[in-house]
Length: 153
Image 1 (cartoon, rainbow, N blue to C red):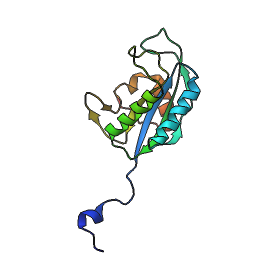
Image 2 (cartoon, rainbow, N blue to C red; image 1 turned 90 degrees about the vertical axis):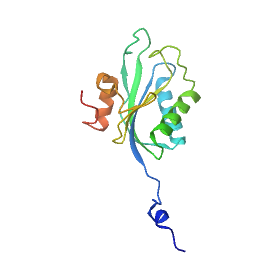
Image 3 (cartoon, rainbow, N blue to C red; image 1 turned 60 degrees about the horizontal axis):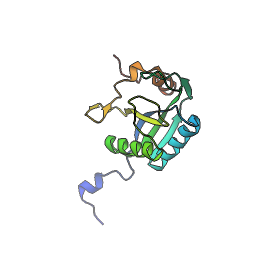
Image 4 (cartoon, one colour; image 1 turned 135 degrees about the vertical axis):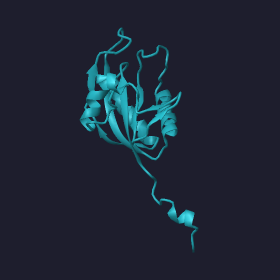
């Protein structure tokens, strides 16, 4: 059977994109929630390749709240950037995330730090994440996985 040139040039395997996600939690069993989030991301076809060490940090921005556990994962996904955002928000919602206070306490927070080398600025998604350079709770675990990755400011 002959294939059309367009069909012949389509990849037979899904194209996987390397991404970096920041995960944080400061309510409930924080470490268990981080692990649950990673498992739920896997179900959404976001496969963890490597995990940073989990670090505990004081809250930033809104200071009167419990300390956070933070980590970064390197993962691979077939999803495009906006579909990835939708899947992440789905995981947060399914885990009971409620946005009552901006930058306030939360049981789970998942941010897209990098989506391969994509640079993007829209009202709903900016890549790389625009605040990486001012967040040690992201920079430290990110540097453990890949140095020189965060944007230069």
